[in-house]
Amino acid sequence: MAKIIVVTSGKGGVGKTTTSAAFGTGLALRGYKTVVIDFDVGLRNLDLVMGCERRVVYDFVNVVNEESNLTQSLIKDKRVSNLYILPASQTRDKDALTKEGVERVLNELSKEFDYIICDSPAGIEKGAQLALYFADEAIIVTNPEVSSVRDSDRILGILASKSRRSENGQEHVKEHLLLTRYSPMRAERGDMLNIQDVTDILAIPLIGVIPESKAVLQASNAGVPVILDKLSEAGQAYSDVVGRFLGEERPHRFINAQKKGILSRIFKTKEEETV
Amino acid sequence: MVDTLAEPTEKQSAAFHLKGSLFTLTVIQLLRSDMDAFAKQLREIIAQSPKFFAHAPVVVDLSAIDKQINDIDFIELNRELRFNTLVPVGVRGGQNKLHDQAKAAGLAVFPASKAEDFRVEKNKTQPEKKAAPVVKATSSAKLVTKPVRSGQQIYARGGDLIIVSTVSHGAELLADGNIHVYGTLRGRALAGVNGDDNARIFCKILDADMISIAGRYRLRDEKEDKMPQHNVQILLKDDQLEIAGFE
Ligand SMILES: Nc1ncnc2c1ncn2[C@@H]1O[C@H](COP(=O)(O)OP(=O)(O)O)[C@@H](O)[C@H]1O
Ligand SMILES: [Mg+2]
Image (cartoon, rainbow over all chains, first blue to last red; front, side):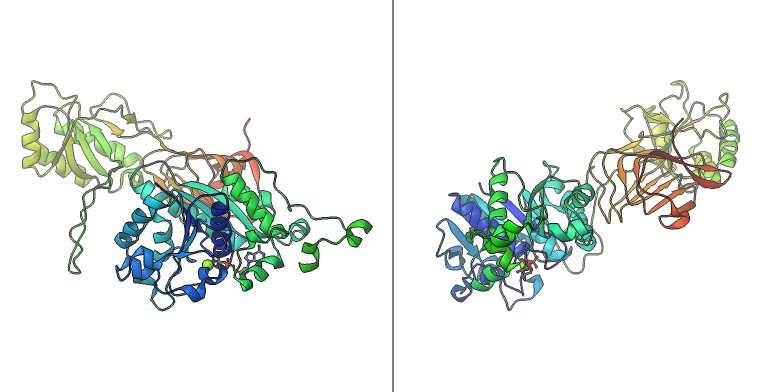
């Protein structure tokens, strides 16, 4: 039986797709058979971020509507074994997915996979609710700004009341807070919320902090999940997230603003040049 | 809470869905069958706090009625309750012979209670102890142990609301009685919503968008309240909201 994990946020553009790609790849690198599903019907960018857009023939909507079978639609990643992608359709409208259809596909995938990662669309309406409905665990992607925190809070309310687990009176969906696009310097200056502010308000365990990093855009332009860029801070931070998810102790890194001394100015890291 | 009963096959034309739910109802435990005594006491109680009982659904508990009593004038009982703005919905407990009479008067029959009811008492004007019916509510305070998130609303009807977690901005708490928050209160809290001006809000950390007691309210920005404040209570003093510590 696979564990179903939704990557969700309420707000758009906070890093859900980036996270789904990195986290799914990270689990597969650890040897778990993992599939990442794009629930963002109509936008379709998971396949771009994961660099398989030219290999999409059938998509998630086709499988849900029984126009194709899973073997035809699953795309096997070229770099990482154990990793599969179920892309979204670019042409269909948002309501092309049905609850019954999604459930059938998830049940089928559950037999073969260890982890199913659901990349949620933005918003708190039907599409986002469907992406989280069947989840066992949730990664709440949040940026350190008030509107993003507020939307995450609403999504947490929906998880607690409108997920399959809550409707069946089962154990709650396990929640993880992932703070992304964090800039320690701006947080220190008070230009954005700091880690404490966000964890105070959302009151769920923090699974990681991903720094704001140019490496993310470069990686997604290249169609390579950023976790494979092992030199980048964002890539390392995502590896830590996967480690913590699997129960390892990993101290949080890249969360303090660096004082720029003479030495660090001379020995610039790759990261600092690109940020 | 039971929210069961399958929806009918989803035809476009369906006019309704059947759903089950649990409600908190006010219970009037009848001690005698004397309708004059009942009417007299009821009018006194309603006169003390008309808003508290306005249009409240009521179940009449018959378990304390003497087994020798063969008749209760449920038609008169109904009329008296409605006259006093209450809405009778059914009876519970007591003898089967009384149930038949209740049904004939258009009342539902609920199964006898297992749980211990709590006594509804308004601390402002104590109802006299001598007379016949005792007004009870079927459940005690409402306890919430999970965070209350933005967009959620929780109402404790007829009693206190206890939150052992945080309350987010954009969330709303309502209670006929007091509100207790053993976490940070960032959203809105309205105590005594049916007019009880003795209701209070107790709070571990107060950082609220709005606080209100019995209709008197205060928004975050007003009066430049320093927020957050720790270990405070909010009460009405001379018709003004006051944020105070504990002695
Ligand atoms: N840690 C980060 N640092 C810098 N840019 C990021 C980071 N995470 C995401 N982004 C950028 O933000 C944009 C939105 O990210 P995406 O993952 O598509 O968000 P969502 O799926 O939530 O809409 C993209 O351009 C992405 O490259
Ligand atoms: Mg996305």
